Image 1 (spheres, helix red, strand yellow):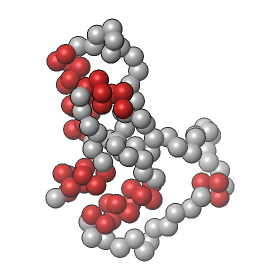
Image 2 (cartoon, one colour):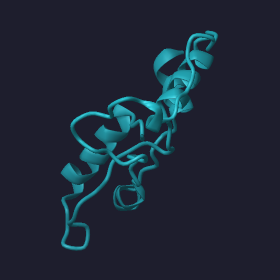
Image 3 (cartoon, rainbow, N blue to C red):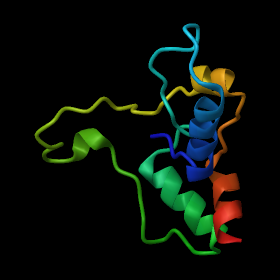
Image 4 (tube, one colour):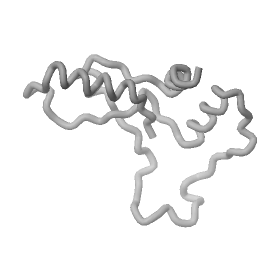
Length: 104
């Protein structure tokens, strides 16, 4: 997973609205945060930032779950935003910094 900050989304959109998309920049862009995080990583980071204990959450292997659902999903669904970062001249924020901005 790639947690993306709404401010980064706005910066990327603003860049293309202001500057357009030339033939060289045309294409498909992935937009995700600066780092890969599992659901457990996400919960642990939020809990730590909020000063909470993580005694009630534990990680489990996805393969140990009885039914993954009707649609197959790869184990890693994080996004590589390097093409977007280069084109828009932005740097995606990491989860800890996002929490600092939003919850402090």
